[in-house]
Image 1 (cartoon, rainbow, N blue to C red):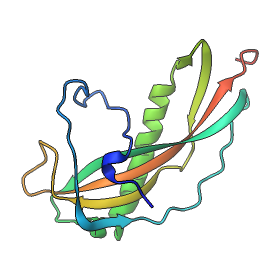
Image 2 (image 1 turned 90 degrees about the vertical axis):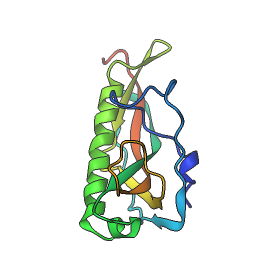
Image 3 (image 1 turned 120 degrees about the vertical axis):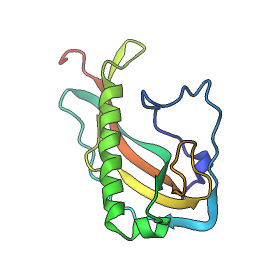
Length: 161
């Protein structure tokens, strides 16, 4: 079972995203009965890096809105090559976000190694929504997407780093 889109955590904003402290909140409501659950394959094994101590696998959940002017519904997207393209693009985005955020992360003087788990990007649900974000081209159809990916978080062994 998936969480409703309004309760799903989101990815960190990109440099082009509005400032979340000043931007008005946007709530997307899926169209009744429009969610399409996507079968999730088995997660890949987590392999900690050799300089790590105590690796932990963490699932990062996110939600986002996609739009199209090709009149594609959630069902159309799930049952076409567009779904594979969306899944691949999401995995690439997640990997880039993790790499950028992991550079130089410290927590209470401990260095944490955070690595994206290869091929862990998953689309859990795509739901048609009648509300599109501001700036979406006129006549677009929008969908709320629930997705997740895994990261491996470890304390780096100070003697080996």
